[in-house]
Image (cartoon, rainbow, N blue to C red; front, top):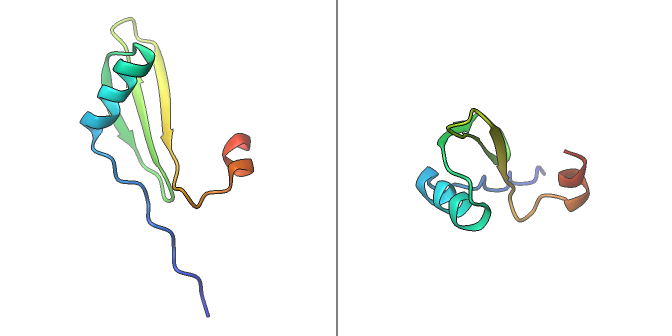
Length: 68
């Protein structure tokens, strides 16, 4: 018997963009990156700095996330 694949997080880009602005003071263009298990975004600021935001599922192992 195979295990069911855990649901991938599905947050709207606008929610992520607002979260990054309100909690980290980051503003810029947000683009979702391809991913199989989680949700990844890259935010590019007006100064061309780039930040990656990873949204992991609740069932993902914390040790694996730290390694990533």
